[in-house]
Image 1 (cartoon, rainbow, N blue to C red):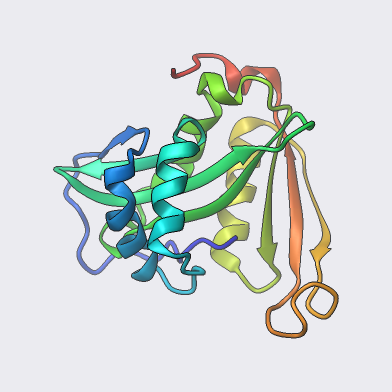
Image 2 (image 1 turned 120 degrees about the horizontal axis):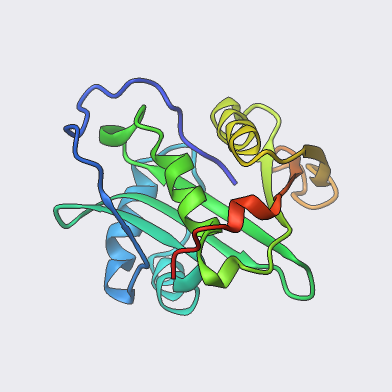
Amino acid sequence: MSVTSDQKPETAVNARMPRLRKPVAEDGAAIWALVKECAPLDENSMYCNIIQAEHFRDTCVVADLDGDIIGWISGHMIPNDDAFFVWQVAVSPRARGLGLGKKMLMHLLQRDACADAAELKTTITEDNDASWALFRSLARTAGGEIEDKPHFEEDTHFEGQQDTEHLVTITLPGEVMLGRAA
């Protein structure tokens, strides 16, 4: 899981905030293009993004500004666990510095599909400062505790091809779920 930097954008969107909504399959190509422009995010296939938008739409969100997808979070409820897993957060370079990543996360946590989530989980490499900042900020805003430990290891899981992913767990106090968005 990675998040792109929260540096001030060179070309910021204006003061209007995008509409946060559930994705549809037709958003798949735009989601794929957004992820491609958000290095160092892992690029999935376009087909994967279409499937996420269709099959996991209740636990994913797009930020839509005048028909342009400028933000995306993919996630899912972990089977047999009261936890919401965030797979990927992407914010267009045009929309960075607006707190959009955290707004999208809070939006997802208030959806009915996440009602049973007592924790948010994600994985982050040790050197991904933007992701650490986003999820630490979310924990502060939500009033939750944050913990991490190595999970998918460089040699054991990635055959030395990728850095170790730390499993980050944020407890979600009940107040976070108030004001649920359907």
